[in-house]
Length: 262
Length: 246
Image (cartoon, rainbow over all chains, first blue to last red; front, side, top):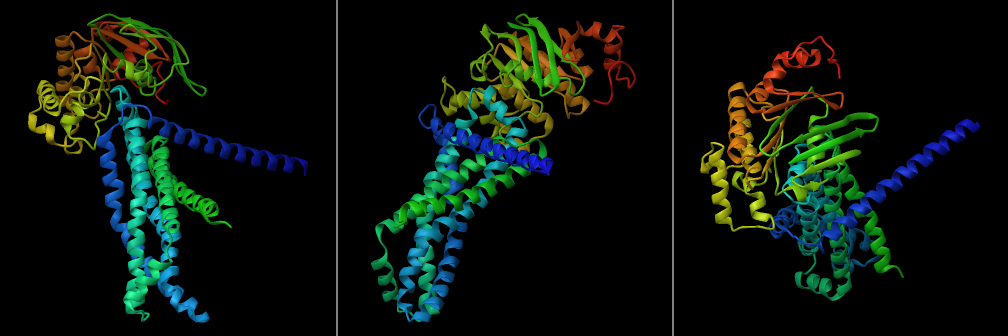
């Protein structure tokens, strides 16, 4: 009995200390990345390239996700509000739902799937093929050349992606509202605009920036710490997507609590 | 030019380098031989500052225990798999430091220098516009070598230059390394387990065995010595003092 308890406590302690160590390493990686923002040299071309890779090329997937989510949201809210004869609230609740929650969270998750995986795979492959070592021998700090441009680009691109996703999501709700639920087009738009507040939109954009930071950071962290061979890179890619997704969902709760709790 | 004394490096309980000592003068070409997993690459990484030794002293080009960025102006490195940057065209790989370093130059000038180095390793300027994935293994080695000599470094490190190449291409790469080392007057360390590289490139040979430089001498001596460890290695025998399961 005592031996079993001893083993259990030992295993628990080991797991907790392992978790704390992992959190510490990730936090230190984040701090190091941010510190490079204030120390030259900076690689503007890499940053611009990543803006295109992460921002521009993610537009289709974020836009499509938002379009269908906005449409489905309008249908669900209509079905729910009809029980209380509150169908008039469909435009405003669809809009609020999109800009506060679904736009940033689903956009973030889609970008996590697309970007965190590709960053981890790319940097992981560079590590196992000695390209990271080659960078160092060419007097180029990999954190500065690879990590900072990606993290900065994702942090700045995500709010724009969220804003575009919000607009497309609201458009999706509008299309469904007008064509399937019998709303008048101008009334739908007026209800959307009248009930949306600045902070509804701004909070979603702030969330987007935080999610972008976390997504790129996860990809870079696991890429830089990738194990050897195809299995190591595969593991890094999987871990990056899982961590980025979990961080997005948990950060979303914390940010929502901070922004909107009474 | 390069001085190493009492260099130790272990990974966990596995001791890889167990007291390496050597000195290399300007213009000398040392070839380090040894079986797979004996620490040849680790030795180069310690010299380059990519791995931190547990103990010992390293002095390269007057720098004590230098870090990679401090060595960049002094050392060119050809990696085993060439380690070319996939996302950049060949000429930008060659001119990587010229485009970014403290002595950064304009694109046109960097391109001209890259073309010059590509020509030096036998590649046409048009190859500069290709991406590494479009090149054969031999061409990638040439590009890696062009990148290593792009800044005309006084020291050249080469890791397994003939790995994965056919015998003809291996001979071409060996000859190129020898020519460039002689022409530049560079101090070179080449690690290999290819006897042809030993013959073609070495002024001096060192055998890395059990974490130490077990044997040192000229290439001719390496091939004619009656030392059982050296004989087993140079003749590729499966029986002898070197375990085959490692």
